[in-house]
Image 1 (cartoon, rainbow, N blue to C red):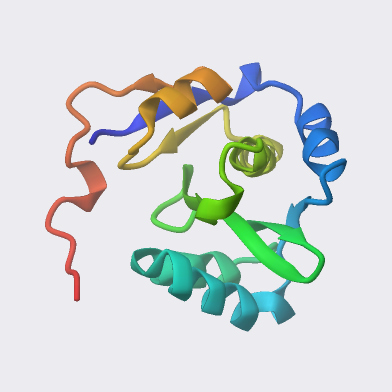
Image 2: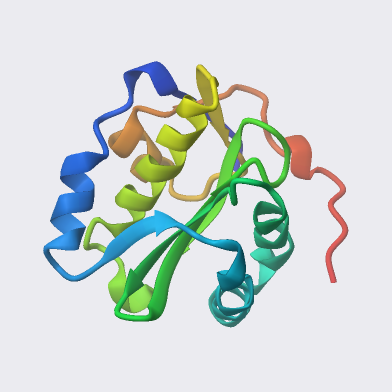
Length: 156
């Protein structure tokens, strides 16, 4: 799948979405450096292909990874500036917690952080759920963007 472009100057407000998931006991916030091990362990268990990019997000200051937590348990994450500057992703929500607005809250929190850094646009790289990004933030497909930055990526 290709990449999508998000106009950061037209983002929906993040506050109402954070309040909605918060009322269900979910906190979405920027991860802190001491949480690196716990977050990486969770990502390795649920989204192993994205561990390297999450490690990069934890190497940045401020950390460019947001987490969704309930109690002391991670249930989702969203990173930015981890594959290259101005890119959103990777992101994921634990399967049992999907459909509750947590992914949207993580997406908006990360995109608002990118906007605060001075970006006017963000790129969602190698998207899967295009409809989700289009509905949540008005993202549009970038023509001829497949396979993009991921072309020739080493795996293993």
